Length: 473
Image (cartoon, rainbow, N blue to C red; front, side, top):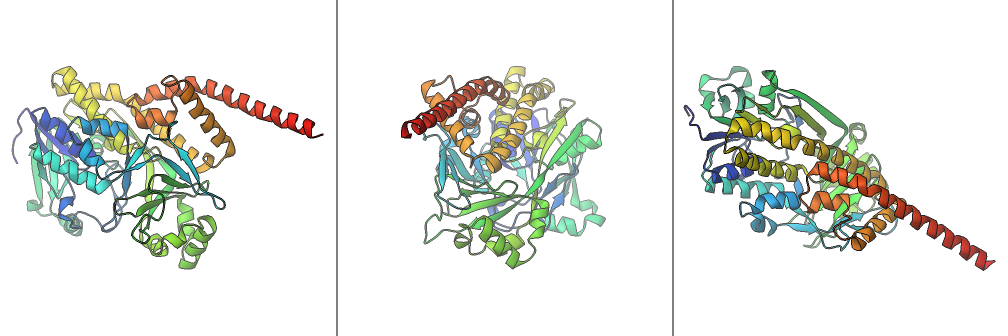
């Protein structure tokens, strides 16, 4: 690897956002090189996965993945819009499982299905993160991008675009970190360096080290842990057409279906609650008490709980997202959010579409396009960061409330009565590409109408009860 050409772009991170970005840039005629610290995920090997949590230069913890395990995600309209632009939406959706609403699991009593849309037909799509990553990676290489795996970024000169990588399998690198041989480092230079390397971005860490940005990471007081509900008799143990929620206040659990007919369950609990269950007996008793329908469906629940790691959740804020019009950040590297609106990947994909639009507007002038991208995009990523935090409270505390259920019924009634004029916040976020900040402004305007109708409905119901009581007398 030597000097760079003016059209050469280095993308650090061959995850979802990085691979999609490579596809878009290759389509524009740029020479794209992807650098990824892990091994090629398509080989099925475990190299590139550390044995324990790593901490990035920016201080954001990245929990290690278990061998053979993969977090799934909810792909909705914003992500699909990006995939359609490069002809991949149909292929990706072929393996998707549409979820048309939430299935609420109370401690006792019947399940409650709450559709996402007024007509009950709109769906978000459960997608395996690993399978989607492999599809995008293959598309990037087919488009002409070169990929260098087992390359961990350890240095960037933002003024020149020179990068320094530690090369070799990740586990071997960690064993010799204190005495790295000269042959284990490699340098490369690109006209543009784009960090698409996630919440713990090494590129962001380098810009921070050069005092070229400010960073704030707000950690949630909740962590997460994954469990698995396997197929039952060769079929889904739960309804695969729903996102399942066990709303228990601070101890929420959700489950998404997988193509192999299993479910990936995720616990969102305070760290102290994870630590408190320190014996198999305590784990079994807790789930039997608070999630009584789960243990019969998850024979490995206790072992999963004991062996799977606890990951951290947080929101990343930084500015600016670029330096010198030469080094930039995209996706979680610029604005990681908590996962409670299912918008992390969708938002990152929308970033790629917006950056592509900025390149159109500036004639591929990176010095103009990168600042423009940050100026146009930041208010929207700040908006979805707050919406995601708000939705966490809704999912864990409100969805089982009779008041919340009444408001949702009223809201769906307004959508049917005023089609296109009244649209719920969830539908605007998940089923349209309305910019996130515009969603927040529109929902504020709609809230007074929803509140007035809900209050009127409650008054009518109270009046009807009073009349019925007088009649019975």
